Length: 311
Image (tube, rainbow, N blue to C red):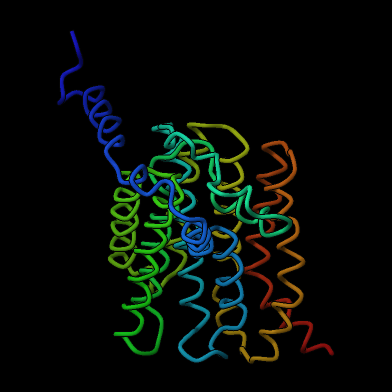
């Protein structure tokens, strides 16, 4: 006798069936310029992009108009929340991606570094539900639209457009079903509403706490390199923020100091982070390195301030 639709098994069965109803198959076979363009667009929702832009925004602080260190810390917390929730949910559901998600359409027409970029950006492996790019874009870009300075209309227009295009890119590239993207948007929006409700826009530590808590749940459920890396990253950021976050907010920010921190910090912290994604490491090593990297992001303005005062 089959599982009832109201039972957990029945609901999971309905979810699996619903995932097969999507538009990714209709978008297959598009001329190469289209998927290549969306391979570029999808980077706006990728982990490396958040690391590069949000850490820079945090280090530069209010030296850039419309930005401040507290808001940048919130956005960092949102990015870590998105990463923690995505990896935890994918571990729970463990649902496959669409057939052909590991194949980049038209890659044989390219060569060199362009082909390497396209192969990496236009393919995906591992569990596919929900879409981490859709979830992260709704959470991070949504938070940016709501909290950054400047024209409210422009912020909402840009944020909404990026969220839409990043989600669409996952369908055009054939790495997600439509349901994966829709659920990703919904979960990301729900988390954003929750964080604003509990005042995370004023106290970024609350976003970092949620990220660490969810990552801990994911690590307990799946004790592997991926989950331990995310847990290490969220825990390192939360501990560092609790220890020195208030002090970091009081460090004066100038364009010169922000550029200096970025010039030193991105190579110093970015290289170890990149190695985690390219080298085979143990869960403990991944946990430790990820924690040190995110803690370094939080602490670096203080290090720069001390160095500047002694020179």
